[in-house]
Length: 375
Image (cartoon, rainbow, N blue to C red; front, side):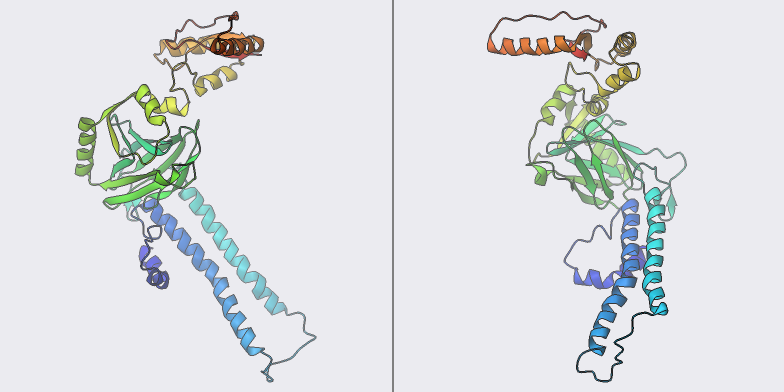
């Protein structure tokens, strides 16, 4: 299909020879299929656009005022044959576009694992994809490789002809991950995890960036995507492991702070639970994970019937070695308001009145308990 695509767009490519047409000539199979879809859709629409433009010129010339030989039929108002052509041709094109869009929407679903790594190369049986966890920060990109226990900032590498399974999220605001040579863009959102499956088929260094405006440092939110051979990728992993520092929660909180034009950074070790904590917005000590909040809500919430379930969830996470859940007590809305007022009073130097809290979990937090309002 790539050969026919190049032939079909030869005039356009000649006119735009100074431009980088990476979207129509990418190095990744997924992006290549998406490029084919763009070309096919364009050609189908040109089946209507070109004749209409040609007929516009023809009618203007044939029925010009000085042409006395043209047929003059002031009472003509209908032609069944012409109506059939006018309505049938666009309808057939719309049907074709709809069918192609339906098929490719499912085939190129970013959440769908790949069934091929190239047009003539199916995914090898038993081949393990490369997992990459992506976090959109202000204003930089963090890439975590859980299989290797490493991470990098504003630089990503992947071996050629190996499926890449992305898990993406954001720290503060909505962003969009886009490597034109690899695949279409995919949104990243705080508190949510999106997926993308892709593959790179040619070695090289490709541009990646955010395609969704996210603030002052947006224009510098770019990274290098390295397509490497298996040997070169192993060398890159070794370099990151030996030259990088450690990315624990405290290091992530420092990295998370807004900064612009950040140089490439490497981390040789990574907290294995960091990405899950980022998705659930509980990296900061003393913060309950969103997944635990949802589990408590499913169990009945923080009402009288759900307290036992909430206590069980908190205790289970503590015993399982997940210190993310650091809630140690429940309080009413009135107590929560009173606690907030007391905190403001502390800041202003006034006397403090401490509310009474009914504890439901024995888990302790070095940063202090987090109290959840119980209506």
